[in-house]
Image (cartoon, one colour):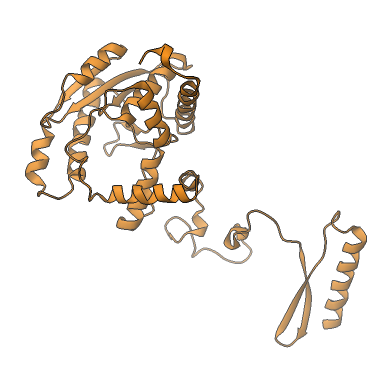
Length: 325
């Protein structure tokens, strides 16, 4: 698609995606001066968008970093080997095509009808890490977006019994590389719209793309239905992943519940009662009017019904407390 055919809405979308990606990079310190970033390109809309946005940010970033695009040719039957090299040559980015026959290994090891994603991802991961080492890349960029992160959170909760998602940034097990997800703040809807406008040469994954029994697809459908019923829900769920309150969960490794005692700094009690949009008027203990009854009375703050009304309420509460004694 030529630049002259882009609409004003497209440029707004492009600017927004670049802004969200830049914010994620800054929040998690994903890319630093002198980094070499291996950008994993699958041929799907997400990785195409990630590469496009990173190249745009690279041009105006106040730091110097290098991008190397990488595609893993897994030797799937019918894979169009010429598509990505031609595209990458046209945009002028340094790239490498890595050939590794993971397809035959997956088909050999995984029974027909079973999901292949787990083994396939492990094999891909090993090849990617080795490639990054050979090329001297210290960062590895993956194209997972906000919706992928939220879906993974529910997958782990529903089927793994863990509150765990995809982190925007993590270290590999051997500590030699940092994996980053620059699109962590970007929605799949926006990425899909951008990819359509850019007319990226999308290559479908024939190995796993047709497996309708994937739990991830079911979780994705659930979230999309929630979003249709309550727009903004996925945004709220992702925001929750960034605003964790350990004292209000139940992980004894994360919070010292055994160490809680009176006299310590209190936790946010208001959230226990969903008191987030307003504050109750102060209550004053009025004493016990009977053996098994206690009473609190309300008084107004200054500016409510006036200082006189507040004073009367306080006086009444004090009088009631005195009478109870």
